[in-house]
Image (cartoon, rainbow, N blue to C red; front, top):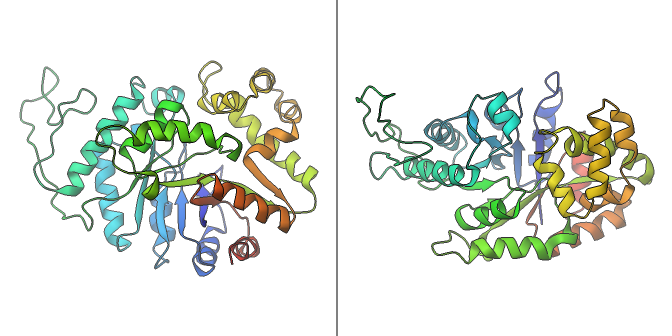
Length: 344
């Protein structure tokens, strides 16, 4: 088992201690540092900024939103950071949801699986630099042709030679088809609300992808980097209460009322009634009530909260379920060191 530092995305203001957390994580033996984006701070700028002070941790995005960048723009950013970091970059991608894709980026959301497949194919063409980059589309045609084009588009190869011809790509996937796609075409999976209780189900979806013709990886060399809330404490009840507003936001407030991929994760876990109640309360602006109705077992399904012995045991369970890296979010240098000691 390895630990990665999940810095996430910024809230209303930039965080004040991420530089020291990154330094502490690298010093404590963490494997990686990841950043994220929603509709505020982007993922690449903080990753390059804080990553510039590191020398050996891997630098990943968890996750970049496909609609924020064209595939060639994403490939350019990735090859640039890969050079600057000495070949330590991981590209984590996700499709987001229709509210963000259409409301924030002004792009169409349809065909997310096909878009992902085409997007990654184009990026890998850029990094391989074997020929001018082309794509028949239909989502990202290169060069652009038709009535909306000048007709002057030309297939191009990147001017800069990538440091690596094959930068790792991981997918932030939540649904069965997307998880299978990750196993088929990516180098790893970035689950957000992972529960080892459903490992057999996850493995079924992953095996679907591994078994497809031309699958890129096998279970032996595929990474599962799961975001995990780990809190070492004797106050389990108080910590559960602190986590519940975060779950209420994702369960009841992300996406639209009838299209919320995070909520669907919890429905697949068997908490459909909880999701319905939380969503109704959250969207009635009763957010505190929405958090309070979430049972403790819902929190415990995808978080590790307890004393040192409990946390160690649970980390072992996650590892046995197939997780290779746990992406954790300690709030202080002391917590970084405390978590690192668990893997000694």
